[in-house]
Length: 391
Image 1: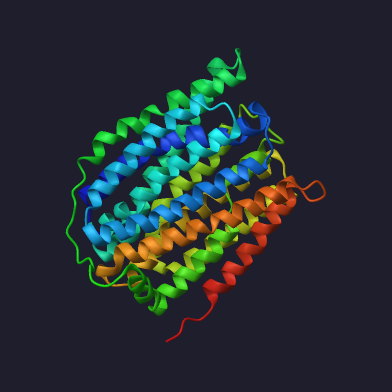
Image 2: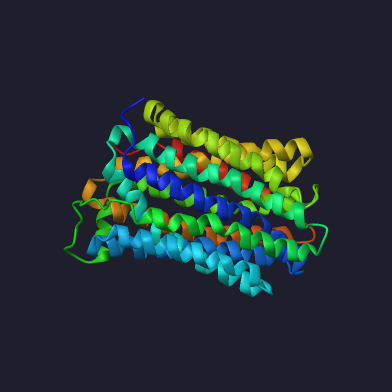
């Protein structure tokens, strides 16, 4: 099973659990808060998620260049987690869709700042043969928080549902922000680790160098296609709301998070043992089936199965590429290589979610066309991952 996980990995696991408890109590409710409570179009959901992932992409690049130049990974981690945790409290006071979109944008700024130094410290603190388990553990703790979050949301909504549904939503947003705020002191306990960071040359030269590695180019290309096809789970949640009372959707969404949690650590271990190509391809098959169920065979059973498969797929694409990246470059290129991947794959969420939102709102096409888009993308990514690498 490999060596024991390091101190930083365990701390990041606890921090991730608390933060995702907050995020997953709030985020599943935002599509309905926009479309039902604020009575706005689904396109705002697409705009919100597009801006969110694009923001993460941009600030991931900024963060990677910052720690490459200054080496201050811990400061970026503290700033990123603290900012996101505090900004989430503002959802309780939003009165229109643009305000919701703006708060979501600011929240993602913090995430973009913190993720690259976090993943870099995990890579520096663990042996290479243990990286799959380390990233899988952090992801499992993250998704464990994602189980707690919907339970918090459902409990608060149930308690306050007899009053105004809008007040129930706002109360949920406020209470849900507490776990993330409690995680802030833990970020100060993280140990920074010195590394061989390149400081000569410009940022463009660094990017060109990283992209010259053949193995990295394939990982990067694969990620671009996957994240173009992988639109936000918000659209899966909206689809579920067509068949289940929106008060109970967070409970249905639990199947996604439970699968995500249970699969993350084993997925990392399977990648260490069997290789990333096999595990990555299996994840794409699951995404294909999930989109098929949501788009064309919706029922309570199909939604449960679809959310479950989607959760396993999510654990694959959040764990496998990180292992592939650090195996394809030397240590001195870790921050830049992770930053380029995170930055540009997140930027793919801009067209992905805009396309999904537009397709969802088209009268003659509607929700099935959104999921057809995901199906086609999963096929394209499968072809790419099977494409032979240059020797």
